[in-house]
Length: 68
Image (tube, rainbow, N blue to C red; front, side, top):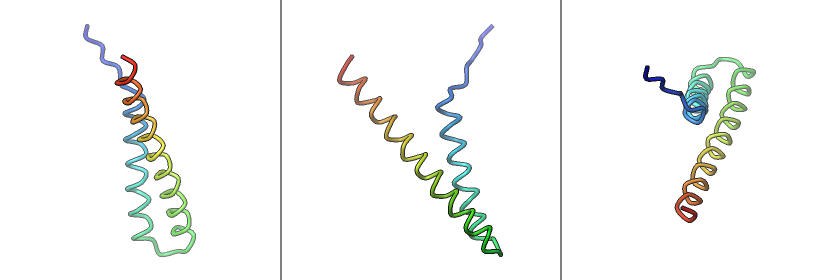
């Protein structure tokens, strides 16, 4: 059988991306201050996560190129 594994890196990237887009839509369409604050907090957290993910992937790529 051909067993394909799902990479945890892909799951992490798509989870953070979907979370970011969902929280942006929550902030845009929310009517209460609580939802605005919570959505903004999630936007900041997922943005930090995506930035960290991208930086680690870039570092890993450079490391693989420089140390074959």
